[in-house]
Every structure is written in structure tokens, then in C-alpha cells.
Figure (cartoon, rainbow, N blue to C red):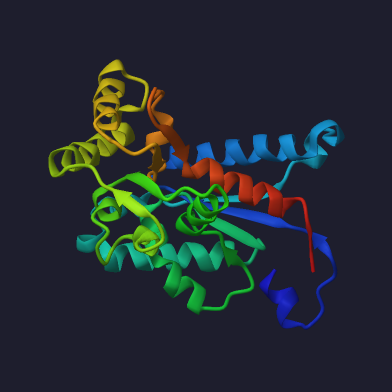
Length: 246
């Protein structure tokens, strides 16, 4: 893809999509599955099977799991992620990083001006909030995200909407819960009960699940709408995959 652009000649082609994963690998599988289902929904009765599925490249790098403690592992994570982005950029028009925390690196990646474009989680979430006139949300994710400090990709929501964060005790429990989902899976009753308690303590009507592990946990909320940011990104990628790219 990069080589065609550098030659100055690029014919109109079907849009190609990339997914960088590894933190954790289930997050990439989940995003891919949701992308496939979103593409089927967009095409409706025109979907004919394999030939109408989106063109997707998946790159899974286990070392990206160091992102759970991003401040301590910044150099190693950046080296790993930058290599993955340069590799996948040779094949795709648009890509997503299936980890909310790793989207912290969006400014550095955008500054490269690659011919492939990152579809970031916070950008898509903010677009959703504006389109639906949602003024207040609760934000759930790993510690680097919910701190809303210098390592949080979701700092760009500050000033755009009112943000409720979990109390310090629940924030620490949530970070450990995400570790446990990565290790043990999302379907144990114990993990579901722990996550349900955290969600039930929130007051906002809308809860952003700003961690790719959290939507994997099958819970419901009677009071709040749980917004799966992975699904929002999948919908965006599916829309892009249906357009010709020139």
C-alpha cells in the first residue's frame, strides 16, 4: 500500500482494514468478529458471503500486553507498537489498535503522516457522544485510562462531556479485574459479580466501557446504558470497508 502511494499512481481499490492486537489477543478477535457482523448488517440482503467480507489484516503482538502498566513500560511498548504499525501500514488503508490504553500513542502515530489512518477509540467514542447529545458519562477502563492523567487516551473527552470516574477503591479493583480477565477469561461467575458491583455503584446514565476486556464480561445494568467502545470502532471500520479507496 505504501509503495503504490509513493509511485504517485494508485487506482481505486476496495478499502482494506488492519487490527493490531495482543493486549490482549481476545480483544483483537472480538473487534474482528464485531467488524464482520457490522459489515453484514450494513450490506443487508446484498451480502453474498465470503466475497463480500471486509479485507482485514490482523497483527497480534504479545509484548503489547505491557501496556497495562504503561508508565513503567513506555519505551518497550512504543518500540513494539511502532514496529507493528509500520508493518501493518504496508497492507491497509485504515487500522485500529484493539486496546484503549495503547491509543495513547495516537499523536505520535498521526505525526508520521503514514498513508494508512488510525481510527482511534476516543475519537469514535466522542463522535458517538456528540451525535447522541450525551452530556455525562461514566468511564471504566484500566488505570492508565481512568486516571485521566498524561497516559490517558481519554483526556480528549475532558471539557467535552462531564465524566464520572469510579472511586479509588473500585478503580483499583477494576484494574485487577482486567488483569484477571486476561488470565482467566471473562465468563466466570466470580468475575461477572465483581464487575457488576463496580457498574452498579455508578450514577451516570451512560457508561463507556473503555477497555477491550470489559465488553467480554456478560453483565447488564438496569439503570445505565453500557456503551461498548469496541463495537463503535467496529461499526466505523465496517463503514469504511464498504467504500472504495483511491
